[in-house]
Structure formats: structure tokens, C-alpha cells
Amino acid sequence: MTTKITSLSGYSKTLAINQLSKSLNKGDYDSSCYWSVEMHISGWIGDWWLAILNYSALNIHTKNPKIGKFLYKISNEYPGIRGINSTNNSTEIRQTIALVVGVCNFSPKDIALAFPKPITIPVRDEVKVLNKIETTPLHRCVLNASLRNDPQIMLKLLSQLAHSIDRFDYHAALRVINVGTFFSKHSFYKRKIVCAQRTWNGLEKKHWNSWLLFLWDVLMELGKKRNIGDIVGSWRAMFIINCEYTKIRVLQSYILSCISLLSHKINVNNPCIFNEKTIHKGCSAIDLMYTDIIKQLKK
Image (cartoon, rainbow, N blue to C red; front, side, top):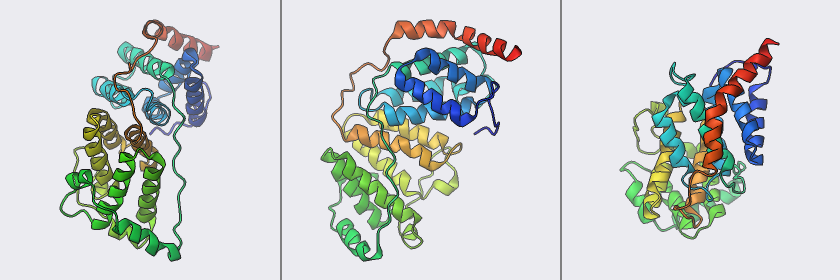
């Protein structure tokens, strides 16, 4: 989002994000706050927010399923956390950063999700893949999510995904995503999977026909069926909001998180916030960390 090469302390943005992720993985609240403050005072709060969302999507899903709902609520109540206005350096925002970092830091972690590797379907295998798609029975959730001009091949392909999720088969669902990604990059098939326009508020016109929007509608239908529509809807809303700020491939971590939630038996009654007393102390003391970093710069 921002183009500044190094932070105020001389760190690259990539290093700062990597160190933040490592600190969160270790459960090191102080270090996680340090790297968050470093990014904030360097004008990278928008990049910090995207890093937090990406980390949470890939590392905190089935063990804390409401994390997406929490983060979406935070972004709505404190839009400055996304770096979209001039109020992103208020005491309220600094304390919100400490809160968000604390929730992510102390959340139980899952096995990290990984983006599926791009696949190439040899020409000799294309007929077999297409036949498998064609013979897939249409899933009710896909029919409910579809619009008039959605192509039949996508109804069938996303029905494969929905049936895989019904079987709690996460890896089979990922294989469907891989096929869809292959189609979207293929000079011939990408014309075949152009979907009906989904003109969601805040979404650029270039995305309106994307198969990923149809996929999100299917995931929403599946989420409602599993009584987690509010959670899936939170991740979908953040996907739409952030399309303007980063690459779609990065945002696909939100899709992986939702597929993981839908493909596993989860307990939505688990608490979202752990170690509240420690987090409260961190929020109260966060300004001291800003002061310490500024003092170091003056030496």
C-alpha cells in the first residue's frame, strides 16, 4: 500500500512483517507490539492491517473461528486501523493496535494453511477433467448462489467444491480451487468462466465478472447451512474492501480460511479473546513503546 522503502528505524517492510508473524507464532506479545508500533510510526499501518488479516486467515481458523468476525468489527468501528483517514495516530487507534495484536498473539494457532501450488493440466488430460466436472451433480447451495448468466461449467465446478466441503474434505476442495485458478489463467478457458456481474458496493468494475465472487456466494450459502454465515460474511466483506489495496492472490487466504472452517467440525462457542488481563495491560502501556522507539531514533 505504501511505498516507503525502510521504516524509521531502518527496517524493510518485508522484514518487519516477517518479524511480526514470527512474534505472533511464538506468542511473544511484547515483540508483536514492537513490530506493530514500528510499522505504525513508519506510515505502514495499512500494510500492517493487511498483514494481520493474512496472518489470521492462514494461522487462526478452526481453533478460533470467530477471529474474522472480530477483525471485521474492529475495522468498522475503528476505520483508522486500515490507514484510510487522518485519525490513525490517535490514542484510540494505538490502543486498538495493542488489542488486535493481543487477540492474535494469544489465540490458539492452527497448522498454517498454505496456498495451493499452481497446476498445469496437460492437454491429454483436459477431456478427463472436463468430463469429471460435467458429470458432477449440481449442489443446492450453488444453485441458490448462482445468477442467470453464470456459466454451466462454473456451476458444476463449484458443485464439486460444495460436495467436497459436505464430506469435510478440505484437500479435495482445494483441488477445485486449483482447477478454477488454472482456468482463469488459460487463454481459452478464462473466456468460458466469465460469470454474471456481481456489482458489490465498493468493488471495482474489473472484478464484477470474476469467478471468485461466485465462489464467495457459494461459500456464503454453505456458511448459512452450517450456521456460520456471519463469519464467512465477515471474511467476504474484508475481501471486497481490500481488493483496492493489494493483490487478489494475497486475499485468497481469506477464502482458504473459510474453506477450512467449512471443512472441519468447529465450536463457534469458543471464546475469541484470551488472556484479557494481559491485553488490557498492553493497551494501557502501548504509548510507552511509541515513546521508547522515538527516543531511540533521537540518539
